[in-house]
Length: 183
Image (cartoon, rainbow, N blue to C red; front, side, top):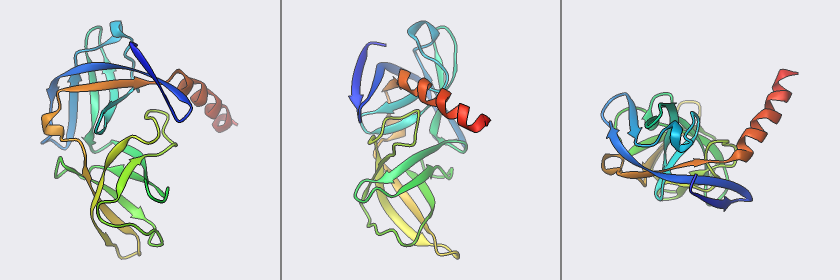
């Protein structure tokens, strides 16, 4: 990996990659990058831009890698509201490549349209504090939870270059957490 950056006291390495294939109009979208095993890319690494989260490396060959896009039904990202630190899970409902959704946000949380959504500290893939989008709309469901629409900062239809990001400290954290779940 070419460069490193310290984010919230965790060292992340990153390198740029060019998108050579990208879908946005399927239910499960993938992105192909021009970097692979020989560039140090491994399954499970995060992919971001300056504007936000793009996805996670799914599979790798010598020269290429496939990313599960944020625009995929199995994609989920731990998020928090920038202004008050409330956490949630962001998913894509499969309709609009500019909008993602947070469901089951507790009703006691106060937020407004245009509030910023960022990655939270619970992810082992993405650094904390990466921008994702802003609240576009919200409504309460029958159980009293909010369903929130998030306007993504990144336009997935105009992606060209991305950053593949990785922290060696992530592996240490995962090994330690697996010890607890094995007990």
